[in-house]
Image (cartoon, rainbow, N blue to C red; front, side):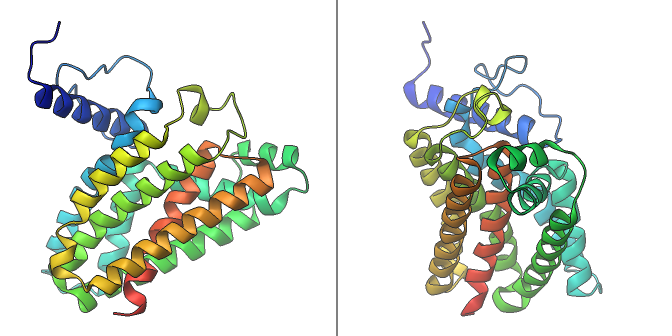
Amino acid sequence: MDERPGWQVTGWRLLADAAGCLRFFSRLPVPQIGPYDDVSGAPEFARMARAMPLAGALLALGPALLWLGLQMTGLPAYASAALVLGAMIALTGALHEDGLGDVADGFFGGATRERRLEIMKDSRIGAFAAIALSLSLVLKIALLAALPERFGLAGSLLLLIGMEAVSRLLCLWQWAQLPSARPDGLAARFGVPGMDGVLNGLGLTALVLLPLVFVLPFLSLVCGLAAGALAAHATGRLAFAKIGGFTGDVIGAVQQLSALAFLLGVLVLA
């Protein structure tokens, strides 16, 4: 029987879930964190996916520190933004970008559900993936480069961290909402999060976003959240129409598109 206080157990379990998410969704060599962190066991997404927003925020801390250093140099804003984005992609091993590319190729290159799923499993990059990834990267660099001028240094760093938390909350939301398009896939094999996990993720995301309330116009933050949610919902509906539900690639695409939409939303009225 665990004799630790309840709040302590809850905290250690949350940290263990965040560590599990970091191991699965990034290239970071995360050591064992606390007594409930099983580094050798299979991931249990039904439970640990709740910590995806926290893991996203933690993952953004390194690129945020890099951006802080770059802001003190004479590099152009676009160059700094490109280096920061490159660091973020390196930390995740381009996992979510790969999902966006596979979704673009599959959804728009196949005529039937079966053919779309087949294309999404193909590691080769087609025309639709190349176009989607090029537009996504160029647009994200441009949006990141605009943040310091619009919201200052503190606002831009907090937005970078907030973007990673919000986008992962939104892909968690769609993951819980949609049926599995490929029941034997990784995204379904290790469990599917429920709405309780989404609510837990929402609470963690609210804590991450709290500092933004003091450095960002409230309307800009609301527009960002609304745009991100709309992009996530639209991607989920498209996935349901095209392949009947979610796959790991769809989850990655939701993360990428909702992150872009969040940045667009916060900048559109700034």
